[in-house]
Image (cartoon, rainbow, N blue to C red; front, side, top):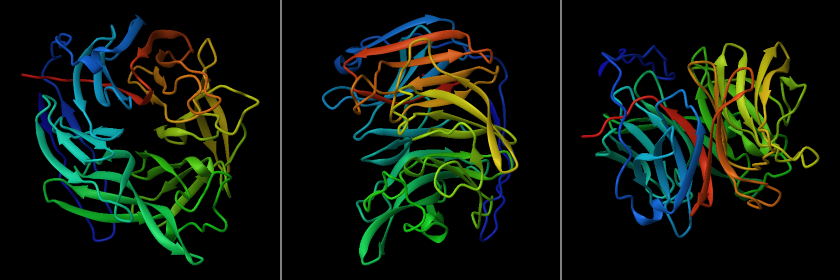
Amino acid sequence: MRLRRSSRRRTAGALLLGAVAVACDAPTEPLPPLRDLPADLASVGFAATGSLSVPYFMLELRHPEGFTGFVVVEGAGRPVWYHRTAGSPLGFTRRANGDFVLLDGERGLVEVTAAGHPVRVLPQEARPGRRMHHDVISTPAHTILFLAEDWRRHDGAPVNGEALWEWDPEGGVTVKRWSAWNHLDPLLDSGARSRPDDWLHANALAIGARGNVLVSFHFLDQVVSLDPTFLTVEWRLGGTRATIAVDDPFSGQHTAQEVAPHRLLLFDNGFELPDRRYSRAVEYRIEGSHARVAWQWQPPRDNWARVISGARRLPGGGTLVGFGTPAGMPAGSTGPIEVYEVTAAGAVAWHLEIGGAVSSMYRASPVFSLQRP
């Protein structure tokens, strides 16, 4: 595979996002399933039906006494690659050179090649330092954006906010790009679940169509858009003090991303919607100061995943939807842990149910190529 990189363009106060072009000479041969899995991973059950439109998908699995880490699985539900983590897997991204950058809740950001060879680590920091959590994304400038805790004293007591950092892996430099403290106020911008040690609970990052950066705040039931310079909040969709009202509200959302200009796809956990008691993938169309549902999907049997989980748009127009919680975790969740590929028309093209020695699945994401020696 040949990779063509865009040039890196910077200013003192902005991250200028250019285009990244990735060209493949020819499709790669699919990898065979791994043999001789470690016992804890072999204890996880994968039952797949249907036809998956992408070669592989990445699962972020956790079990307190079993396997915890990242697993790449093919459409028949058989693992072809894995990376064990010391802490919870909390998101990953793919660099233009094909490397994975994995967020390990204990170690920090771990860059490995597609063959699984370690490249570098950005170490985790202890509180109240720059403790990374919940998401990491690559930029077209070949840097990495990640979420981190941001502790400050407010009204005489320590309060944990949110910060967005940028890491230049080759240069070894990290820069704080944005802090919620500069734009939000705990007295005005708090939700029912906010507390001093976790005011906003950011859980997702994405780069938008204009180079804007989306941040999802679980505890505000809100997605915000930051302009490409990180200097202003462009809009606040849903939830507390919204600038864009949502006609059909979401609650406790994950994996918010722009799939087209003014179109936002997210996983609506329905955390504070007990009368509904199901989660869904939903796409909103933003029209001025309102957002309306353009597309939504829920599985044939209702599944209320009150935390984690995700929805990812696929190149052919389908959507990969993952429900990450078993029954009762947290209270009210119905389970099972499962992943669907659904068409734009809402038909189920593929389904995977995950059982055995697994307690949660943080996310399921498409993986388009993978090689190992």
